[in-house]
Image (cartoon, rainbow, N blue to C red; front, side):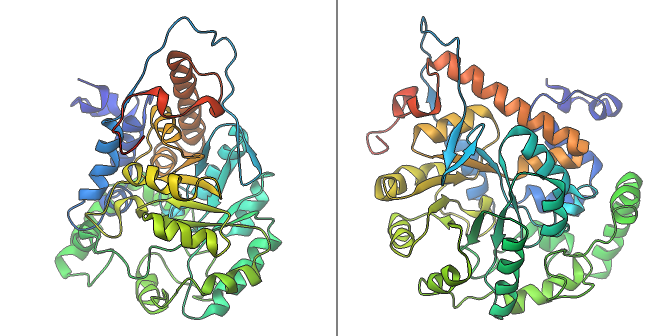
Amino acid sequence: MSPVQRDDRHHSLNLVPASYEDYRELARRRLPRQIFDYIDGGSFNEVTLAANRTDLQRLHLRQRVLRDVSELDLSTTVMGEQLSLPLILAPVGFGGMFAQRAEVHAARSAERAGISFCESTLSICSMEEVAAASKRPLWFQLYIMKDRRYAEDLMARAQAAGCTTLVVTVDLAVVGKRHRDVRNGISGPLSRINRLRRGIDIARHPRWVREVAWEGRPLTFGNLERALPNARVPGDFQGWVASQFDPSVTWDDLAWLRSHWPGKIALKGILDPEDARQAVANGADAVIVSNHGGRQLDDVPSSISALPAIVNAVGVDCDVLMDGGIRSGLDVVKALALGARACLVGRPWAFAVAARGEEGVDHLLKNIRDEMLVTFGLTGVTNVEQIDASVLATISAEER
């Protein structure tokens, strides 16, 4: 039985985290239920959420021995940007609700690890605050809104803050049906019973109330203050989102994006090879194979199962990244083996910062690095460029 499965609450809260699962358990204990479920949950019956993990776990690595692995190099380049390991901290909305100024902590940790941090449109900390805390240029994730002035303003601010890459989320024409959020009252009408339950739940987490809700103020969306002045999290935000996310966006709108963004553009939310080809044809520098962490349309393919066909379709024309289900250095190597240039992780850093703040994200990234070093050494590869399907022991003919 692992430490996080034990009944000893004191021991679990004070364990030295050794894995993603440990950080998830620590975050579960420290966060109000509605916030934990917001991070942890997916859409509908969470079939795709589960598949992101199970499909990765079905891939087995090929152990090789008696090879010179005395010098290992995890570094790579993504869209011309040097990374110390093939990892990016993904955009996660509401981050500052997980820990006080969480986005700032995550960006600092990413800088120390030599990787990039992607700021979300829906971050609590503004892009200016996060950029000022890190010497490494940020990436910025953009939602396209009906009033394009908001998006244009955000792109201008991101350029002024020194962001190098614009990550455009394209799989949110409509918001996914997330049953956990409905039950917890984060989305939809809040019943009297749910309001009472939520109040009791929050009262049972005084440390979170003190550090985040009080000392971490203001809990407003730092990147949307001009669009939604003084909006409190989460209530004032829901109606605005429903009215502003634009379901009419098409490929033609990429020309408008390019006219306002001189840097690199990556499209996040690609699951189909034809969409990947369209992305390249319309000037994308990278595509991110992603099902929004299983939070949008359920019963779609897992990210890892969709990856090979997209790599085959556009891998020579742009960088292909992957998001969804990555929890360890083992997972990163499996994704690289199927053609990903690098991976994005969202829930891991969210749980780590909720559990242990900046120290938690530092430790999580060190763990992933160490896990990759072990995996490199025992699969007999010494650098990222050597990783291909040959490091996998079981792989279907279709995926080859």
